[in-house]
Image 1 (cartoon, rainbow, N blue to C red):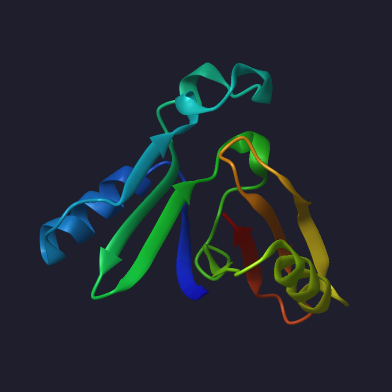
Image 2 (image 1 turned 90 degrees about the horizontal axis):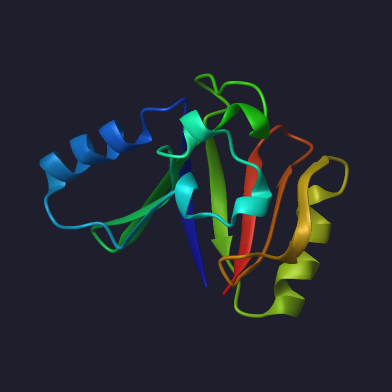
Length: 136
């Protein structure tokens, strides 16, 4: 189980993470673009080069990020450009924590199986904090 910061960008995620990598060194643990997604997701052609997911270890903690394409919601702004990402230890734990954290808030992506092989969901809690729950 791990708690990490997940950053959201308006098309410059790759640039930002290259900047972080130039400062801290090392390599990305994972890097994928929207073009790597299955075609049935319906991503606009001009946004397929955007970052779907990047994970980068800095001192034993994963800094993660992605671009937010127009189909996924309004542009991000300072203050709503991050989520807390929780890597759960079981599917049951994922469901329990998701239910508790989303209570009184808003589910932005219901829990479900994903094309990347995880059980995943996202919500905004009643205090306005964005959360992502992932069980691999």
